[in-house]
Image (cartoon, rainbow, N blue to C red; front, side, top):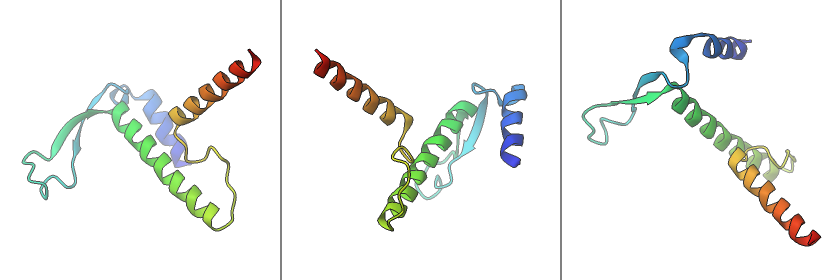
Length: 99
């Protein structure tokens, strides 16, 4: 599968380490009047953006499938930070009830 090839390249190629810098082209730079359409970023930052945007799309998919009566896992399309926050609130509530 292609995804495994990509993972292997990210793990084994020193030029693709998370802190490696890359130039990223802003697609709408010209329409917004920005002269330099390239910005400096890192592989790690771009992967974070990709992950976040993917979760956003998963949330839209979950919302749409639920609207059509198809149940999906409650955590599908929910950001990991939100899941951690919800778990900590639930744990705090459980410890308050136990006290």
